[in-house]
Length: 339
Image (cartoon, rainbow, N blue to C red; front, side, top):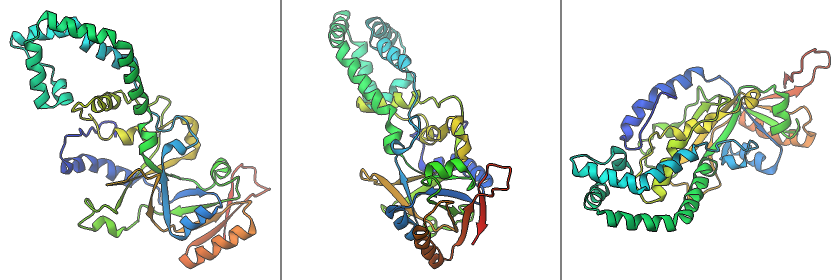
């Protein structure tokens, strides 16, 4: 995944070709079972009844680092200062008048039309003109960089506010997972088989243009002690906010950055489902309908909640399991009994 880079300007059909090896690899390593921990509530009962998997924004997750973008602010500020300095612009003007060209990066930032206009302005700029612009910049520098810093803050939280994720685990026997995500063992877990999932929507000829279709991708978490570097994304985000034609260097950034988590969370053995839609319209969540294949009742689930869930499970033809503790075992592990 780290080696695959998909520029924003690349045609959609080419993106598919670049993505195919990743998708095929993920399918090969995908476990036959993935589990979703749930608490007993009216909302979760309704979702189970409708076979709905809800994906929410990472700002609702319990890890404050989740999808929080890391970037080199000093590097970006230095680039802005260097690019706006009198000496830099003067040297650029002299180079252009001697047959040189603006850096190619400017073309990707401004677009071809603005690129040529800027080139002409710099070529014909006098020292007096540049010095005047320098004075204007110096007098407003503090306000300018405060505004830039505000944009940086928005970029930091972009993924946390604009990504829809549903979380799954490779294990149903984690004491900690039952404690954190299933109301201290009083909830339930749903089992899914995504590897053999056959969704009719995927074969529909309107799947790429349908406004109602929800797209999904499933990837395993990358547990890494070093946070993912999103400097390139923040640079393009800044460019776009400043009204520049700033292409994103790698459209895979959204996925790569969202999959990196601290090894402290490694016990979760997490897989993430990313949901997206052509027009999300500022929604707080997205959902997709996929039926589970089994349900597991927590060790401490109440009899009434278990009865409600069991009736729905029987209607769906799901397998049912009860989690329990074997007091004779020397292992700290939840046990499973088929009902």
